[in-house]
Structures are given as structure tokens and as C-alpha cells.
Image 1 (tube, rainbow, N blue to C red):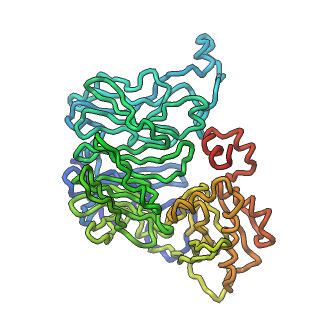
Image 2: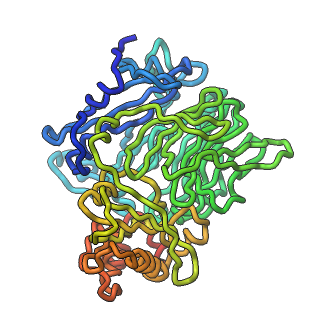
Image 3: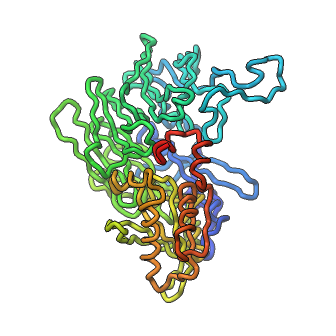
Length: 546
């Protein structure tokens, strides 16, 4: 095994940092932070393997290095041969086959597709909707899943599992390798796909799970009749399949639940808990429980739910972690320890271990400790503000470093995008609360109508009411905090992106002299224009009624 030992202190310096005098966060310092991404648990169950990506503003470049660290914490080791350390989940359990995705040309789109002699043609020819998704034009190529024989470490005899189909797996625009998986017995490949084209594709969110059986070559729709998003298939050690599911077609922000099928029955494990909105999950090693992340009260926390199977046991959901932080991902389990990633308003992603007996957490990676030692952090606090309809609304208030209550500060109302989304203890390299506060601003960030983690009614109340109660929620938040003596009411502004940008535009028309400044990034400004240009028509159909 090729590796070299490296201390945590040296690792932090390798991320482009060193210890220096205390200073406030700047864009330059933000971009020097190392970005941690988990790879997985090592095959021997003794180490966590992870990547650290660093950026150079001067060179306009980035570099990624891979390390592993013992589960109990300690010295990090840089590794060069990741494939030998972590199980390749794309190889079948019996080692005979492998799966991957590749682009396949299906449809004619280019002028040269129709007229091959016109090799310099740059014309696109479209006959229906779905000619673009986000920033990618439909060029007639589609991602397909391929099955290959796996002999002596090499894939041969590739077979397209979706021959001639003008559909994608991974799904666009945000699907990835987790969209196709092996069954535990190695007899089937299950993949996610929305098998619709044209207008039908543009107005629907109905993705399904398809099982390809190797022995027969037949494909079966496992979620026939389930009309919303069905994604993230994962098997346990008993060959039982779990996935994430939404109920309603066309509603991309519907309540997302965990469904499990044992081949005989399907069971929704989380439907009866109104507060649970599952973000991601992972089976326990014994296949009896599922660990998952859900938004709750302005944070992302780790939960566990049991799977009773055919027994008469009751389904029980338990919250494992608590605190003002976000659990952002689940890496894997070793014995009674779960490895996760975590952030908060002042700290970028790092890896932690969770004691499953009591939910206590221990930080494993310390990639940015040396940087943080030289950066003044922002104080933040929770507040609950009464809305105009008598509800208690969580409002995050973030203060400048060195905050002095005897002084007055310019104050910004932060308007979250979405519109259905969560406003939690995230750490962003775009909208970074610590960076904004470091420039001398107080930030008021309300978990207004449309936020998850406060029940489905709160989350759904914003649909078809973009300019209604939610705007009153914004004003209730800024009015409540503005009662403090340290808020300079002559220097208030509001900022936001996407639906947050729409909010900024809307507030500019109704604010009654509350704000002096409005900053909107990629905000919706004309709903009719949006409807005529969006490729995700299901969104405008649901949110604005078509």
C-alpha cells in the first residue's frame, strides 16, 4: 500500500493555511478552507477514508488529496490507492459483473444528424419540450446503465440495460452513481429512471425504480403506481430494498419518506411522523434499522427507525443527535459507531463519529483547525417570533465578530430560496453567514413559511401563495429584531437568491420604508416569463397553478 503519514497540524497547513493573528473571515480566507468529502469505511473496518479538496484563487485551480484516519481518531494518513481500501459497490457481490453508466446517442438533434454531409452545421432541431435541463441542452445523448462481465479486474462484454430508450440513468440534472445499485444476492440491478419524454417529462416528477434480472434479461418496474419521486435505492444484508419516495406527481417538495420492500409487501416507515422529512439514509449493518437525516427545528439531525418486516413490531423513530449543527451525510457503521459529516454556521464540513447508544459525537477530522484558530467567529442565537397568524417562527440571528450590544449595526434580512427548503446550520461557500457578519452586519434569517422541519402544513403553506403569508413572516422577523437597541433601523437591507430574490423584489414593493437596500441574486421577477422559459414545468404548475 502506497501512503505517507501526515500529522493533523501539517494537514491543515497543506490545505493552504497557517496560524496567524485573529482576523475576520474574508472571501480569500474562505476559499483557502479545505473541503472534506467522505469516501467510505475501509474494508478492515478500522479507518475512515475521505477526500480534501483545496482551491487556489491565484492559479484558478483545485487539487484533491485522499486520506484515512482511524475510527477512534488520531493520525491521518495520505493514501494513493483508494480502490484497494474501500469496497467497490459497482462490482456484483459474487465478483462476476460490474455496472457503470455511459452516454448513448439515441435521438437526432443536430443538423448533421439529419444531413450527415453537412458536417459544419451547428443547428439544433427540436420537436417538443424537454430540449434543455438547467444548463445542459438535449443533444440526443442519454446516460444508460451498462452491465459487464468482470474478469481479472477488467470489465468486458458490455450490455446496455436500457437499449434504444431515450431516458436517463443517472437522472438529470442531479442524479449520480447512487441511482443504480446491486441487489444483495447479485441477481438484479436496480436503477432510477423517469421513463417519459417531451411534454410528459416536463410536467412530471414521477421517477421509478426498475429491476433488471440478469438471468432472464427482463426489466420490472418496482414502483408501478407510485406517482412521485422514487429515488436512492439501497439493499440491506437480507436483500430487502429501501428507497426514498414522494407521493404526489408534480410536487418536487412533497414529504419524502422511507419505503421498504421485502419482495412481498411495501412499508412506509416514516409516513406517520409529520415532522420527518428524510434527506438521506443508510441501513444498519444488521439490516434491522435505518439511520437517516431529517430537518428538525432549524437543524439537520440523525435519526433511527426500525424495520419490523413481517413481524407485528411497531415502527419506532428516535432522534439520535441534538444541537445547533447540521448532520450533512452518513458514511457508514462499525459496531456501535456511525460515521457522519457535520457543519454549523462557523465551521465547514468535517467528519464525526456518533456513539449509537447515546448520540454523543466526537470529531475525527480537523482539516481547518489551524485556519479557524486565526478567524474570529460569529455568535448566533435562536429566537422565536410571533407571526401575524399567531404561530411561533424560528429566526436565526447571526452577529458580527466582537459584537457589542452598546453599538448600532446595519442589519440584513436574509431571504432563503426554494421556496420549499430548509434553513438550517449550513456552511456555504456562496451564501456564507459568517462572511456576511464579518463585514459588520447582523443577519436575520427566518424559518418562514415553506421551510421543512416544522410539519407539512408549515412547509406547504407557501405553494400558490408566494406573496402572501410568507411576506408577512419576513416582516415579522425583521420587525421583532429591530426592536433591539443595537439594530440601526436607518441601515437595514434584505438579500436573497432565486425565490429569495423574488422575495427581495416583492418586499421592495411592500416594505413601507423598512429597508434602504435590496440585493437580489437570480431572483424570479416575472412569473409569466418564468412559465414560458422553464424546463421544469411541474414546478410552476404546482407552485403557481400553471
